[in-house]
Image (cartoon, rainbow, N blue to C red; front, side, top):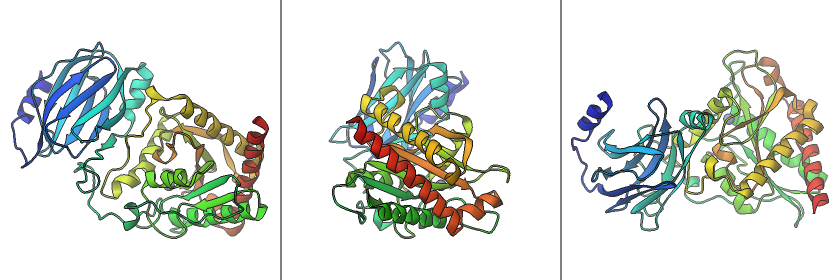
Length: 401
Ligand code: ZN
């Protein structure tokens, strides 16, 4: 009762000029289609528990006519205005369901989202996940979504066109792209030990990994950034994808509440985080996108758990195999934690056909870890460990052909 009267109040129009109207909301068994009379700014979808709902915020849109659901998953459809600029479409769920990949039509006037039944566990994981943004290609970046959690800073010039970094190494060899986490106005975590910044350590490690691989002469390497610059998360894997990378390794350094946590952790992509800590870390790392003023956190190409296709599954397996190889070949070089392999929905790992890992090389909150990961020797060992696992990873792939 309270909820519906709240919504009634929110529907009192306080409309911005030139907002597009919602023409119709169609909720079917497998998909939701929202049509508008003009192109809208973009959309964000998220899942809420207790009562269980799916919400879709459409920026620069006005509510439209009442809609009914013809789906066993959805009991009712409501529209409201959480702020003066967007319309929230709320689907009250009849049973647990999650929302998947979404995309706009070419003219930007229709948004289609997948919906599928979910287990209680999948639903809970979805409810803990960050909102998923869907950019409208018809609008592009000229009209950034006015998301409530964006802070306004200007976009770095690098965000406008994908940088094409230099590729090192002999032609025709497999390409490994190393991504130094953070950079530019985003320092990442800052160590309470002596103020070391994650962005500096990750860059230094990435360079050493590059040098180590090049010295071995069997592979090509590129770095997503070679200096102190900001890159949007999705750009990082997109750069690698663009270059045709065969393996993508994103380097980060962890931080924890206390000084006790120590060691390196390997993360691979999963739609369902392996535990709450992994989910929290993914949310923190994914936030770097939102900090840049435009939320590019999720794109049309995003693959949702319910729609994971075979290619993605193979890539996830390949990523997991590489994580296991790192354990076998480089456990002591990397100082891996005992629970060394964890899974979470990192934006940076979401290229569907490129094996990708995110390596948290150690804790900036632990003084021994800082000594190791900020030192020349410690960084060289990390590079050596990665190179050994890379050698075997590609040797295995050749053997499988
Ligand atoms: Zn980081």
